[in-house]
Length: 284
Image 1 (cartoon, rainbow, N blue to C red):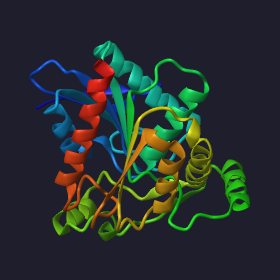
Image 2: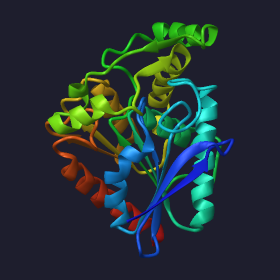
Image 3: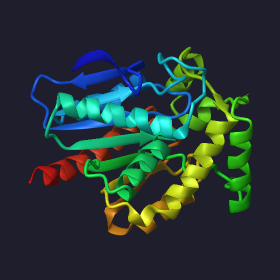
Image 4: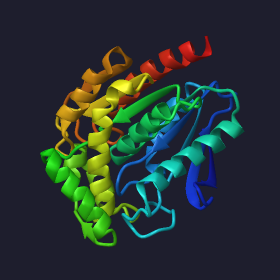
């Protein structure tokens, strides 16, 4: 597998990673990582997709990995969506005419879903061929009532600069002890987030669930049945509201980090099976 470092995003400053194989790709995929994470950690997913003749692009969101910005900060939620749009355009220009998929993990699942919904509602003609939402952080494990969500959203706009640190026990991410230690000692990972970004993710996740019926893109939703970091019922409700366009696959015995857990090989196999079927239909 070949690897290339590049730069993308609205201002061309976000660190990206492009993975390709020897054969000409038949499809392309954009990966959006979660809070405190970074794109290079998705190499296992990229490797699995490259074997199926995909070109895969992942990039570090602002304030993550090797991209500039304060840890856990975002100038705006719309700005993050524009960074995703720019990365999609960059990838499409490099590989014109190929079906493009989006993969979002955790916070990245929230962003990918929100992006696809906005593209749909705005009548865009450049929609992804499919979405893969892995442990999407739509709502927290104990979601607040709607009035509280609005109050949180308002608070985030009033005090956007306040940043909090919320350490995550690696055992909530994975049951693999070796991976847990790697996560714990990884200098590029962080557990910081501004009140603005936290409340935006909360309100946007609620908004996405409310509008899920309008999303016409084939969507695969994977979640660990032992994931303590998200509201798993929100993923189930998303699938129900999308109807036959969504495929919900619970991953038995797995936690939040589906790409660094004991069942990762099974997750990659499920993704490959689904995405190849959708890629084939996109080429028909």
